[in-house]
Every structure is written in C-alpha cells, then in structure tokens.
Length: 298
Ligand SMILES: Nc1ncnc2c1ncn2[C@@H]1O[C@H](COP(=O)(O)OP(=O)(O)OP(=O)(O)O)[C@@H](O)[C@H]1O
Image (tube, rainbow, N blue to C red; front, side, top):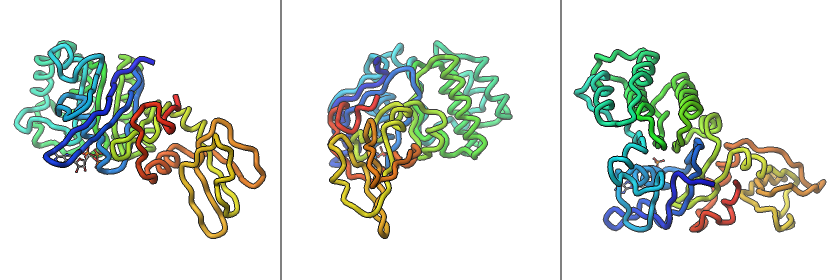
C-alpha cells in the first residue's frame, strides 16, 4: 500500500504541554480519508504538522514522500484548508483567485472560476464581507484549484449549511474522481464522513484507536445484544470494543472477522457512527505501532 502521509512517534509541545505526543499513523494514497476524534485529540495539530504550518517537537512526519513544506515543489503538492479557513479580509474573491494563480504552478483557473460562479459568489466581493460559510467555500476553492496531490481539510464543513455541506462533499468526490488526488479531512460529522470517505482513522489522545477502509470497518464490527452477561465468554478472536448494560440487557460492539453463532446473542450490523462512538468512548490505548491490535483492518 503506498502512503501519502506517514507519522512516526510524532509530537508537538507548547511550552510544557503536549498537543500531540508519540503519534504513529499511516494514511494510504489515492483515498478520501476521514480523521475523527474527540475535542482535543490532536487532529488539528496533526494536520498542521502535515501541512508544514507547525514543526514537530519530536518524531517524524513525511507527506507526499517528503518533509512537509520542504521546498517549492513540496509546497505545491499539498493543499491545506485550516480550521479557521483563513482568507485575506481586504482582498476580493477575484484577487484571491489571481493570487492563487501567481503562487501555484498547477493552478486550475477555469476550475476556480467555475466553482465561484456556481456558488453564486461575486468575484468583486471582499473576503472580509463574506459569511463564515462563504469564506469557507472560498478557502476550499483555493485548496482544490491548486490541484495538489494531497488536500488536507481541517473541519471543512463546520461552517456550511446542510445543503452546502452536501454539495461540498459531492464536489470533493468529483475532484477525487477527476484528478485522482488524496484527501485527508477531519470532521465530527460521521454521517458526512461516511458519505465521502473510503478510509477512516479514529484518533483519541494522539493514538490511533481504529483505522481501515470503511467497508472493512463495517464488515468486521458487529453489535451483540442479549440478556445481561459477562462478555468474557466470547471467543478469543472477538475483541470487545464497548459494553453497555441497560436493565436486563447487554449490548456489545465487537470486532471479529466472523461473529460467533451463539443463540445467547443476537448479532446485527452497526452503522459507522456506532463503530466510531464505541472507539471514542474507550480510554486511549497505546497504539504506538500502526499495526496495533485495533488497527489492522485494511
Ligand atoms: N497553540 C496551542 N497552545 C497550547 N496548547 C494547544 C495549542 N493548540 C492546541 N493545543 C492543545 O493541544 C491539544 C490538541 O489540540 P487540537 O486542536 O490538535 O485537537 P483537535 O483534535 O483538533 O480538537 P477539536 O476537535 O476540538 O478541534 C488540546 O488539548 C489543545 O488544548
């Protein structure tokens, strides 16, 4: 599997506080990869390190085969839209597009203009006068029109209304199909990630708790329900991710290639949100290696 991003024991420290510590993960190339995790898990820090906006305190990170922001050619390979969708308040939309053209060797002017037109945005409007969602759309347009090998989006849809969110996800899918770019996007909206991502990474407290193709994650996780009992009796290849007791019933989220056929349990399929929530509810395990027990689900 070729990798577009590789982090090894990566850490970033602010004064005495680690924003990300000992983070090891692999991101496959040619995919739309969702990065999901609770507030403060280190997602933005990781994405800022990947884009070269931050430099690591410890460990290594490689993006598109090189050091993040390590020279002009490397900069051209990666598009990054930060969480606060930065734009220049005093510049018009048209000026942003011209700036994009000047700064990016692979700039796709036709794509940028088409997208701005379709969004109904006036190229003469200053970015400072745009709504939060419109500003996000401008920043996304700049990221896509740069035609990067890897597009990194930190919570790109947070400021968008539901319709704009759906359209953005569709644009992204089209851009991936047309230009074959790799995408990493973080979001708390698992339903949106499910619509657009084919690979998912769950990060909790700097550690990968689960990672794999969405199809594989769905095929290897099962919901077990039955009368209240201790899950310890399940076969050894059944990894219990979460346990909920309510009244006389027990519900488990279990990872197993093939669920055991036991009349004591009713087995059903969880959706992706159930799987993600089960991992988010766990204390972080020390998944130093990308092949940690919870990870190998490709
Ligand atoms: N500039 C900073 N100075 C000090 N601490 C920081 C800084 N940026 C992030 N942190 C801390 O690092 C940790 C990880 O933050 P980060 O923003 O990467 O998390 P996140 O997973 O993106 O969270 P969210 O989902 O809320 O955006 C948090 O505890 C945060 O308080």
